Length: 369
Image 1 (spheres, rainbow, N blue to C red):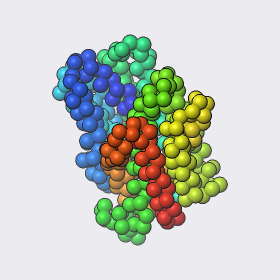
Image 2: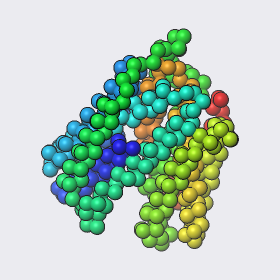
Image 3: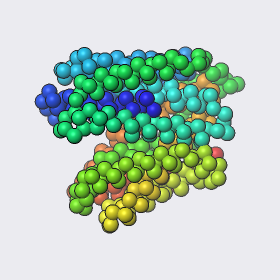
C-alpha cells in the first residue's frame, strides 16, 4: 500500500513541477517514459536477486531507491535533469519493491491459499493507488498546480516509513530448489506449460485497465458527460476492482480458478463492448462496475497461477517476467488500439480492447489447472 501510494502521488506531482518549470510537452512524455523504462531493463535481474538473496533484501533496496527519489525531487527537482533522475529512481524503487513483494507472497503462502493471498495483496495495492493522490487534493488540489514542494516533503516522510517497514520484515533466505526444478533461467520458465499464455493474458488485462483510464474521459466528452461524472465512473471502477480482489479467495473456491478467470475476462469484455454505445448515467455506472469487477480478478489470479506453476527458487524470476510482459503490454496494446481504431474515436479503441479481452478469455481456457 505504501509503495503504490508513494508512486501514485510522486508521478503526477513531478509532472506538475515540470509544468511549473515550463517544460515543453515532448519532455513531459520523456518524464513519463523514464519511469517505465527502468523496469524493462532491470525487471529480470531484480527477480534473480530476489531468488538469490531473499525478498527482504530486494525490498529494502527498492525502499532506499524510493526514498532517494523523493529526496531528489525535493532537493534538485527544480531542473529537468533532477526530475528525470527522480523518475528513474522512483521506477527502480517501485520495481524492486513490487517484485520482492510478489515473490514473498508466492514463497511464504501455502499453495491452497494463493488466490486469497494475492487477492488481498492486490487489494492493498489498489487502496494505495486510491489513497496516494489524496495528498494532491490536500495540498492545493483546488489550484491549477498544487504545492509541489510540500508534497515532495510529505512523500519523503512516507518513504522513510516504507523503508522502516521493509527493515522490520523478518529475515528470509532464498527458498531451496525442489528436486532440481528451481534451477535454470528464463528459458526454463517459458517452457513450463501454459506460462507464456498466462503472461499474455496478464498483460492484456492490465492494458485494458490503462486504456479505460485514458479513453473513458475522451468517451465522456464524445457523449457529453461532465468531467465530474467521468471521475465518479473511474472511482466506481476502482472500487469494484477492490471488492472483487478482497473476495477473490471465496470466489475461486466456489467457482474454480480457471472458470473464474475466464468468466471475469468475458464479463469485462462484454461491459467494454456495450459502454461506447452510451445511455443514461445509471446504466453506464452498472457497466463500469461490471468492468471493474472483471478487470480486478485477472491480475491476482495470474499471479496466483504463476506462483503455483513455478517451483521454489524461480518465483522471483517468474514475477519479474510477468512485470516485464505487463510493461510491454502497456506500450503495445494501447498503440495497436489507437492505430487500428484511428478515426473511430474512443469507442473504436474500447471495442478493439474488448476484442483483445475476448481473445484472452478464449486463451484462458487452455491454461492447465
